[in-house]
Amino acid sequence: SQTIHQWPATLVQPVGSPLSLECTVEGTSNPNLYWYRQAAGRGLQLLFYSVGIGQISSEVPQNLSASRPQDRQFILSSKKLLLSDSGFYLCAGANREPTEAFFGQGTRLTVV
Amino acid sequence: QKEVEQNSGPLSVPEGAIASLNCTYSDRVSQSFFWYRQYSGKSPELIMSIYSNGDKEDGRFTAQLNKASQYVSLLIRDSQPSDSATYLCAVSNTGGFKTIFGAGTRLFVKA
Image 1 (tube, rainbow over the protein chains, first blue to last red):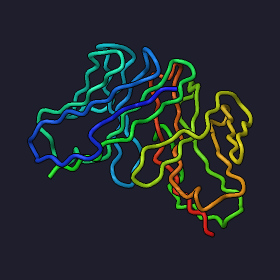
Image 2 (image 1 turned 30 degrees about the horizontal axis):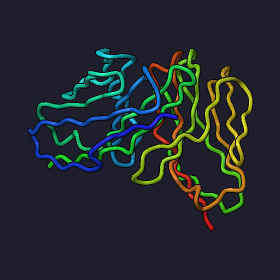
Image 3 (image 1 turned 180 degrees about the vertical axis):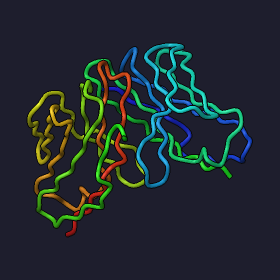
Image 4 (image 1 turned 30 degrees about the vertical axis):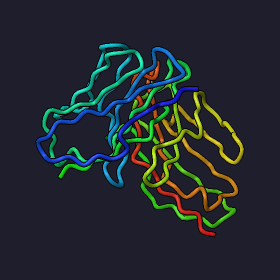
């Protein structure tokens, strides 16, 4: 079974600062990878998904970007954080079949 | 129209009762359907997946899928206080390239 490693668990950043969140996957090859964001008391918003190295699809236009430099590494970045970027960021991975997504432990980001 | 819709709740049931959670989706070509449980402050964990019409049972959980009605449900039998959580319905397209989640239903099981 696959394991999603995500860090850090919590992060407090000032407005305008850069962001880099990293996620790595164990136990599978060539997974689909996802970044979701969850605002307090809300559902999961799909931000980016990737079906392979260097292949990124963006679901929501915003000041965030994603990259997949290696098969099992997925990075979420921002050059300048906004207050509205605060939330619970979740990395997830899924095999092609079956397609169940498994989540990392999440990063709670607070932009101050 | 939201792609995946759930009643936000909260749904409150007594211990030992059946909890019924519902979900509708808008994309008729969706292929895979999932239920996740999320405790407060934690990441979602998969509890059920279903791919074809009908019922699928796993312990106290039963998932039901009706593609013609674009409807998915989750039944929890003999509900326990530890089942109190937010339940997220998720739907993905062919190949699972894009998995979309509903906003979740909060369930409270009263002891």
